[in-house]
Amino acid sequence: MAMKTLRHISVVVAGVLLFAQAAASAQVKQDSLRRAYDFPAAVEAGLKALEDADSLSRAALEEDLILSQNGLSMMDYCSSPVVVAKYRFSIQDFFLFYPMRNRSWRPVPNQLDSLGGSDIARAMYIPEGEEHIYYSAMDRDGIRNIYHTELRDSLWTIPALTNEHLTSTSDEIFPMLSDDGKSLYFASKGLYGMGGYDLYVSRWNDELRDWGMPVNLGFPYSSPFDDFLFVNTDDGRYSMFASNRECASDSVYIYVLEYDNMPLRKKVGGVEELRELASLTPQNDPSKMNYSQAVSGTAQEEDANVLRYMEKMDNVRSLRDSISLYNRNLDRLRARLTSDEVTDRSALTSEIMSRELAIPAMQAQLEKAIRELQQIELDFLSSGVVIDPDKLRAEADREVVGAASDYVFSKNEMGGEPHFEFEEPVSVFDYSFKILETGQFAEDNTLPAGLIYQIQIFTSTSQATAEQLKGLSPVFEHKVSGKYVYAAGLFKSYSDALSHLNSVKRAGFKSAIIVAFRDGEDISVAKARALEATAKPLYKIRIVPDDSQSLPEAVLNALRDSTDADIARVIDNGTVVFEIGPIDDREACETIVAALEAAGLENISIVDAGHTLAE
Image (cartoon, rainbow, N blue to C red; front, side, top):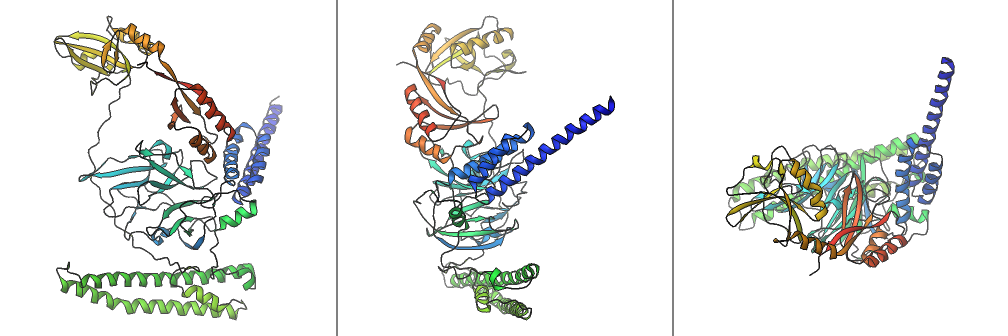
């Protein structure tokens, strides 16, 4: 009997392993198709995999399927930017090659991000004189979120999460504020996307004084790979971002695109067109080289030679870039020498002369690297590798990188560690009704507008102490006709107040009664209940997103076209939910729901949102 049981267990275990292997294989296939931009095939493979999936593997397969479906949906909304240049840099310092303010990239960990630890976000952008700083830092759960702090007088506000729209269950990195302060660009792994980090923009809402729902920038800015650090240059000519879509994880490409204020989005013709679009090939770029046709010999020898050549070419570029930057800084010092602001001209003159003496050694180092590069070219030829030397030398001789537009990357210097003096943290009083070990008086005794119920607990000729509250919180104090009146809670409906009345009585206030107020003025409970009964109902449209995090762009467009109601992203028992409203017309709600369903959205419901009081 025991042997039979063991054989049965072995069969079950083997079956489980086969299921797990099949699920893993299906996941790899879907992921491979998605990374190849073949979203139609990836969705088909994902749906087929789910048919045979067990409960253990279903969650991972569904998550991958959502990414593939998102990519398929975004194929209908693609931009076609003009690509000016692209070049590969090390992941260690690629951000220094953006045309941004010098010495404004600060190392992490620092005061704002004490943990650091991101493979990609290794620095944060904090220019001198900036009064609003948005940055990414790790929370207590190890997830990177976007925080904000601003300068008030001489102190910085306590850093706070930007808002719920820009916060997901995964990482957000590289928040970059536009010059006009109206757009916030960032990268996220947790919002509506197609895998890896996608690029998003959130617009500032002047009426709400808050950031709006983020929108995925779509193809070709976002991809199934990691795309991040999007900026529009200060001169208004270019948009730039970085991606590892065409290289190993230790390096990234920076793409330079012509700035387009109103990009035209359209559907791509198919997978091949999408791949071509996502490759972001610079127009008429003479630097493109085809090694597969230019060299001979084994693939391994070719790769070694090419790698050796490219490393030395990078060395030449880096030295040229350093000399160029050094000379620009030297020119700035010379310009200062002629200005009227300099107080110690002799010290500045001495510094200029000292820096000029260092130039010959730097130039000699560059010339040595160029000779070594030329020797590698000769080694190519001697080993039978046929490469066009003029084309390769042209590639190496460019100052840094330029396409047909003569765009040049220049390297900035790293800034020092920032220092902030923050305001003292201010605790926010919790006005939700509760019974604690020690009672709490309300921080502010002002009653909110509208219809409010409270539970009156006692009156006294002298002010009460916290011990007399018997754990109730919050308790409001009002002086009426020379006596102090104490009432607990803020309840928006009679039924809500009634549901807590017995708890208050059991706490020791057997004579407690329900009282009512409208716009801070006391009214009878009967009148309050009559108002509540005749109040006009309000509704909210409740949406549970398919990807558990965000709404597709098509749905956001449908919302903008059909309603001006507020959109809020809330967490309900651990689930992300979007609420539209309040709306006082159920038929209007049904019209909005129909528009959302036409945009392909499911999991929509209309729920009660309270009442509006009659005048």
